[in-house]
Image (tube, rainbow, N blue to C red; front, side, top):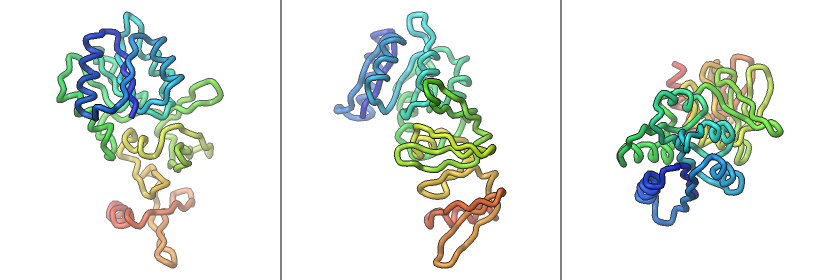
Amino acid sequence: MKILIIEDEARIAKRIERMTRDFFDKEVQILLSDSIENGLNTIENQSIDLLLLDLNLNGEDGFEVLQNIVAKSFQTIIISAYTDKAITAFNYGVLDFVPKPFDETRLVQAFMRFTSTEGKDSHEIQFLAVKKAKTIKLITIKDIRYIKGAGIYTELYLSDGRVELHDKSMESLEKLLPKTFERIHKSYILCWQEAEKLVIEAGGRYNMLLKNGELLPVGRSKYKEIRQKLI
């Protein structure tokens, strides 16, 4: 696992590094960066799994980093004293916001959210970002009907019929999406408001009929849980 810490105060950066190693393991690779420029260069040239980002870097705004990497495949945890920016950060799809001053217990909570397979239970994001050529395009969460796995990527199926490719995996999106989204199959996450009814086919196959007439497969292990929600 490779983790990037962008923090301009060396003492705090070392403290975060120590806590990070204590939680994960001594073999985790940790990269340190003390500026926006160095951080963005590292992100461009390294494949990372988790970003720990301060929002005030020698007077520079860490949101510049966030805006540049919001469509990347890795997760981001903000560690900042600027708690007034928390809502905006969550809107950009960060996994957690750890306010400074922080202790190890609070940082561990953020790490547990990163390692958990559970969805996020608060701070619902407002949009997902997708890369279009050299620009970032924001997709409003309420416009997403369902999400389909596409290898290490995902496809966002939108209410206007468009399909957008997203860099984050199904597992990463499950941690970010609000509870209105349900994993119904290993390859599908559905906006629950789109569900009409379960359909049982010959051979014991299960499908979800959507309000627009589409059928999506339902995993056998998910059938009973989903049936209960539809009652």
